[in-house]
Length: 264
Image 1 (cartoon, rainbow, N blue to C red):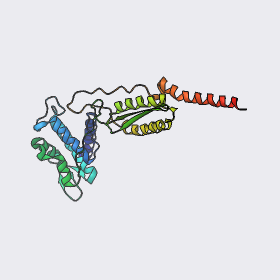
Image 2: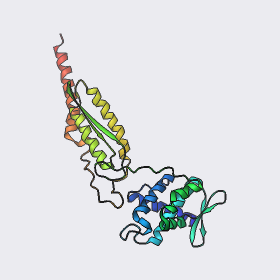
Image 3: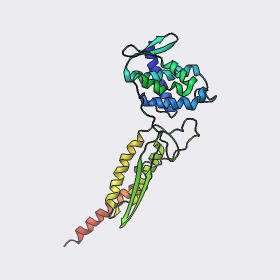
Image 4: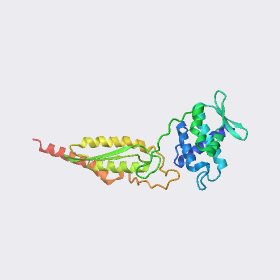
């Protein structure tokens, strides 16, 4: 394997490691804001935290971060990794040569003056503006999605509406979704507003698609451990839900039989 394949493989490993610790590392230019956040958390003032992720093997991990930064740029602009003295460099289309590993070293040494996002923007891989990081409102975990769930219960002319806005992590979102769906399956069918409950059920299923694709919840880097909600049993393994589905069918069947037997 040459230097080009080595740097690409190393960047893939780095992205997986960052993702596992709660950072978004999807090789998009905007993910460089996450690298900035990682460095600000793990090496405030340029000094690695003794027990942090950069507290040991710094001489190995800095080049790996530089490889990720370079791969973000290469995947956006093209180019190839080459050996440049003791370090790897990236040759871009048009003949420019950049040195992302040295830039990460510069960022550690100078802080904001060595901004990685400004560096990428200068060569044409603009990360765009920084976006706020969503945290689960229930447990504080990341990643989280801005999903909203609701429940409608209807009996005769009575109606009750419950709304639960996010953001939610994967586990807390699943727990809230299942709890509110159970409410509607149990008491959503017995009033004049039943159609509203059906709409709410469908809206919840749509909102749930934002949650199911999230990675496992994790604490913000440097924060205390999180305790997501217990999602509980799947809906079709809950007796209340099964009873709520069967009860209207039984009642409707009984009404049809009664109506048929009472007909002249």
